[in-house]
Length: 281
Ligand code: PAF
Image (tube, rainbow, N blue to C red):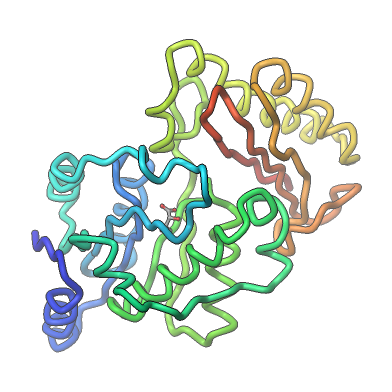
């Protein structure tokens, strides 16, 4: 497996790969890899001949007072996991200045309504940082396909929109959320949770599932579905950041589920902000 710490190394390797005619899948990550990431890598392997993984805790997508400094990191462990998954190349920039050199000044601002609500509202500037780094990675790797987790439902929609708006020639693939046996969605941020918080964190999935059961039983009204989720989530978490039922394509709130919809939640358990979602219909 190739470990590239500089973009020149990536360009050289990708150039050689292009000559061999092989198809490339890119899995962008911030590292501290778990089964969720590995499932994206496996999806990439199904869709292309080679898989590249980027590992970069992107400062541009963290707001002031967020967890940039304590975001979990384990490069050695990540490399071992990538080796075991047959990853072709890992790009782990040696320093943030490798991605944002002094004087860096170009940003991708996704003005679409897709990026305005939900995490876009709670974390101003977040999607600007995500879109910028993702576009830079797309330019560097020129992959045929890029795989993102559906747990970050809004991020996936924003990246898809950026790819469409900027005429990028690649397929954006969404990988299913991987869960612990008790339903907690895998996330690198789960590492922050104490044993007691870890138990409370399962309320996100339990709440979404309760709403899912109500939907399966025929309930279509947003107020009832949201209330079903809130009844379980609210008592267990420290604060609900948002709990919304939105149209799955536009991500705008719906009052009644007619087309495919998605229930999305962000909540703080202790100081840890967790997100999860459930597609309906
Ligand atoms: O989902 C993530 O881990 C990050 O937002 C991404 C897509 C790697 C961009 O930094």
